[in-house]
Image 1 (cartoon, helix red, strand yellow):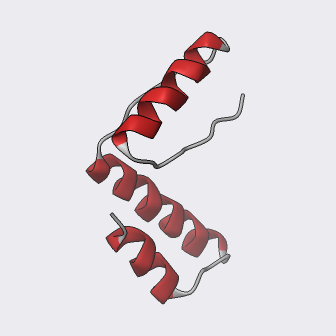
Image 2 (cartoon, rainbow, N blue to C red; image 1 turned 90 degrees about the horizontal axis):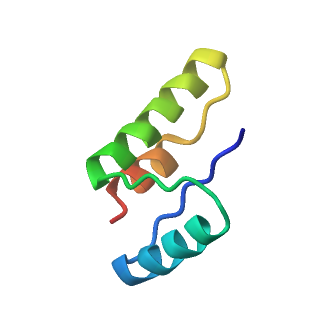
Length: 65
């Protein structure tokens, strides 16, 4: 099974969530801090595996709101 993560404004999230449910998908809502945790975990995995990204890009993703 695969998953996608879409970050959008509240109204767009509502529309996308309703569409996903109508298509039979499971929708899980996460808070901003959980989203940042996912990004940090992804960066940590990349470092562990030797596949690293530019630190400026990581910090930009973490600070984007």
